[in-house]
Length: 382
Image 1: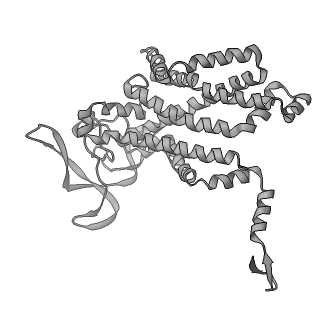
Image 2: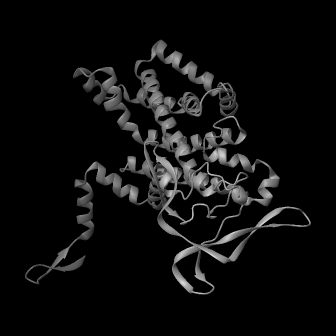
Image 3: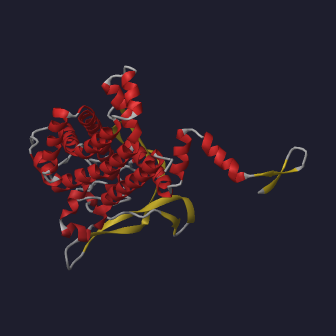
């Protein structure tokens, strides 16, 4: 109990614990879910990081200092450049700059290396004019948020690949393909899993038997070999867009089985409940009962499945593209970018080729943490 003063400056006793309990009793469902979600610290941290990744994927062209196909033949396998704030002559400056890069040849190994040329600097500017591109494939512009005044000068925050292409630019563009692949794939997976699982659990009989035997057939085949076989079966003369959609369909067709079984099991236990019988007697259609009454009652289980499936889809696409069976150049995805690191020699001399792997790890972790937080928030009464 703590003393609190009223308008007349008279002390009154307020039971804060009781007030807090009353606040929980009258709070709405969404408010309870938000309070429960806030208690999951890792989910709170993951939400803005996921938002940042989505912004990067949406505005990759503007955020990139170069074009993903732009080549700097004089700077093949150039190491990442460091942003400097202290100039040897003028001292500290709020505007960062990078040094020029000079190529050297190791006389013993005959390996090309690059070294900073401290005699020449390039200040970094915002909203600079560079090579022209189409934003979202619709609007022509040449504005880049960050870059150098000279578009031909070296500015490689993550180094370059074997063709002299900026890895930072390609990684930002790769986030669009990899994340959109995961989101589109999981949307189709959820639709197929909920529809077939709901029909199987609600109607039963021969429909349930056919759907369950189909699930058993898909589950008895290991997922990775099945991915590889179906991906390899895609026609080689297809365009990158068709390959992309084909890969999405492959992951959706294989990945719906787990969610369908969860939905079926829950509907089997809920279809004879009083609220289901009341909806049926009120004249609600079977599809409305499934979508409006049964599925929302176990939304937390669907969230769990989705939060697990998104990282699995990202890793699956990355694995197949890394092995050369999925998306291939000129498509730019995180898996395609990691393809250059297959050779140990390249990895030993150019470790910055693993930068896309860091983005993959971060994306997988934040989806898992966010899924845990949403799972807890979906059932705030536990």
